[in-house]
Length: 372
Image (cartoon, rainbow, N blue to C red; front, side, top):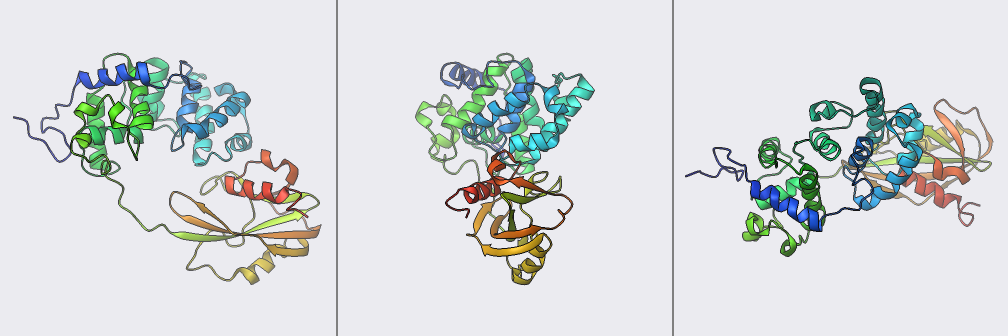
């Protein structure tokens, strides 16, 4: 008799089960999502774009961006030939900006190395910027019907509950075991429906909280449901204290324009325009009184007429919480514009490639009732 291991796997790794994939396929064809704008197409460019946008982002947030992005960059050639600043501007507000930089770099490579045609081989796709193993499998499954396994966050959750997988799925040994299972469960055909079905189950039924078990096609075989552990599985990531940082930001204004600084290509908000900062993002415990540093910093931009502290803001990144302390600086006259800085009209700020919290701050500031 086969003995179960701590991962919920048999010691012989005998994981194949055609009834699993068939249940997913049958459910997806009747109850899955079929009307999303990137579905019902074999255009690898559109499939790729949607998969990158959907990384760590909900469908509802992606819909508008996807449509506007395609309107501006209808083909991979259009994207590859566009300035990176234009790409960042159209991504602004969607978050995780490394995705946008990788998107542009990937388009350039697809055009230069593959003549504008995305390769069908998932290994070649995974070698391109911003495309990992799971995303590569999804792209080629939807655009070519390739038999390749996905294992995104939704699929990990489905597998962890259905098969009673113990341990945090982000831990390498657990993830490796899940990959073995994902490969073994692949159907021989209907890859599009199976791949979409796994995604749909995780997004609509097997959700993080309050999963809709009565409507799930996998309920009868689900270990978590049978043992009353749907709230416990998958095992959550061990908690760590979220570091907190502070940034004194300067909203330098003159003649209806605001001064913006080009951030470095890498790092937080990489490649975007943002507000000049006094000391950058520094730990709360080491942040000094910004008074003296602030006074010295504003003098570099011109003849200062007024400095006013604005309401503080808080923005949460994946790995720390940022306390933003903005200061409105009105100039009577400008000095020479520093390198990597640019003046932008406040009434056109919505089109600028800015981080979402900075853009919201400036849009609010530009309203007549607030900007006097």
